[in-house]
Image 1 (cartoon, helix red, strand yellow):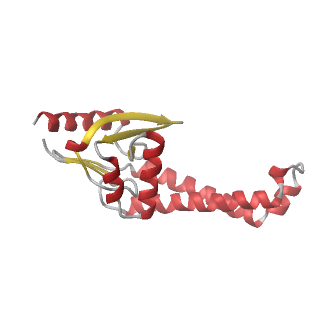
Image 2: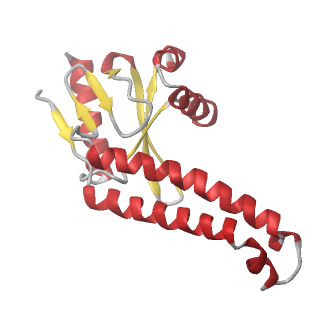
Image 3: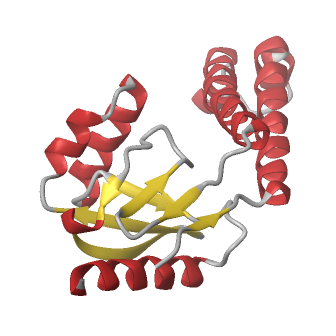
Amino acid sequence: METTIIQPSRFKQMIFLFGALAFVALGIWFLMDSESIAAGSSRDLRRSPIVIQVVGGLSITFFGFGFFLFARQILSKKGSLTLTYEGISNETTFATIPVSWGDVTAIKTMKINSTKLIGIYVKNPEAYMERQQGAWGKRLMKLNFNSYGTPIWIATNTLKEKHENVEALMIKYWKNAKSA
């Protein structure tokens, strides 16, 4: 079976990039103008200038990080997801460790709000978490493992292919590798 490279959708990534930028701008506005935002509303805890500043700071941090991630993906020339006879390599997140089909025990879809994810369940998840180099990627993998039973999740919402097609391709490669 030949190698399949699933490219990211630059259009979808640009939408996420500009969305993140809008929330960063909103966070800056919250930080710089918290007094007048609070003054124009009822005086409960949610409208205190300090709470508005904290929300602004969190918005800048979270969406600024998202902006960085999407900008990095847009500028990258790599494919997002590579399927080979040996395994799968996911370049869409910090956790970019290749997964051997021989380690895969299940492939399942999960939906969080409107985002569909593909979970790759492996025989020894701890080994995959240990192989992860970056601190952020390691934390993300541990959080995924503790919450959903596997450290390896692939978001398909920024890929050119539809979720169902990506999942079907992954299962096809996995079954071919198991039968070989």
